[in-house]
Length: 486
Image 1 (cartoon, one colour):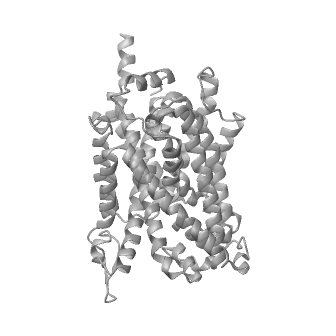
Image 2 (cartoon, helix red, strand yellow):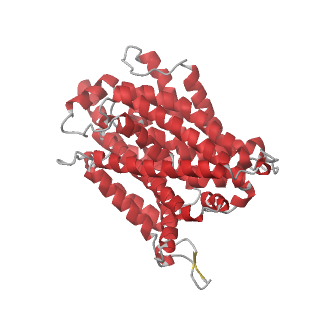
Image 3 (cartoon, rainbow, N blue to C red):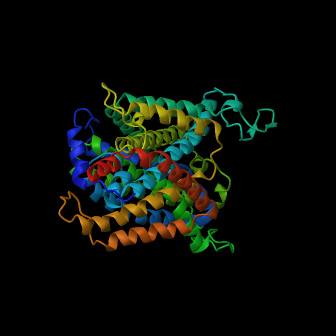
């Protein structure tokens, strides 16, 4: 379980697979756009209002800043890793090189929470907004086909069904984006760039137009008094809020999963990781400041579309459809990048023998792990179409915080064990920056509900069983070590 794959071997395997492996087609602008595509989505359009109403009030701004600080420490660690180990796999690959096979498996399994479940969660939200947009165009989908069998459905006559049949729009968007990914990374990046440009344009428009409608009284009290329960306003609410909005920042690490498809990973990966995080943080803070200034945070209680609610006070009703389109673009790019990140992690795990070879088959023409793309098309579609995805934002956040903590720990280990390895980027003030990253991540994890911890342990237990039943027996590195002993 403690078998480690050396960095030299990781790089060597990557160089040997050039031509037969993933195609290098992404530059620094593509990588920054990739990160923004994954980060700026559900966090800015939904979580801003939810956290303001339930946890932090106008101080949701501080929640975003606290979450961004935690991400910044970890982003620096990711940047050093990506410049040093320019291969696919993200935190899984990095952990394999620092803490061994078993911990690498734990991280890889953990990333399923981050990518697959996040994709499904956002697909359900995408479906909700798409249904609203179609209704504005007088295209009314049967409500039974826009809800899972476990979600109550309100019919046009006011009656309520116990549940729908299937969330069809959610399945459609997952399927379409999976096919785009299977077609090619360059095509996926081009599509993502267009989506990012569209949603950024409308976000900036929201900030500019909304600024003149800010009412100072909406910021008082800036930090509402705690209700007596941890996480409900006051400083504990800011901490709980930071843990929740952390879901909105997880996309930057998806950039590192594309290292093997970057033209110049040693130089471009740090730009993509840190650049996308900086842009997203500025947007989150400005957006949340304007939104909570336009209307009282109490207005967002139980509101599934707080951005649209806030924008309504401007009187620019003709832009309502544009806002929904931007939200759809934001969600689409998040789903696209998450699906891509998941397939690349499984590609790396399959190459190491910990998963069936099915996941690392490369298409002869498109140079993509197309079978992995199709597998997650089915898996995520089932989740999005038939499962009521509530509270999974917490579950995704705790899994990501756990992964980030191990990544930061790995930097400290590598500085001791492999100081001679060439690094295109170096984390400053090691070990203090990684320790701060670990500390802030663990601190935010303590702010999440007990149910999140229970679900994490259950998921990890399932993963550990799978590792001992399959992964350990088929590990290529383990087999090689056993051969050497003979």
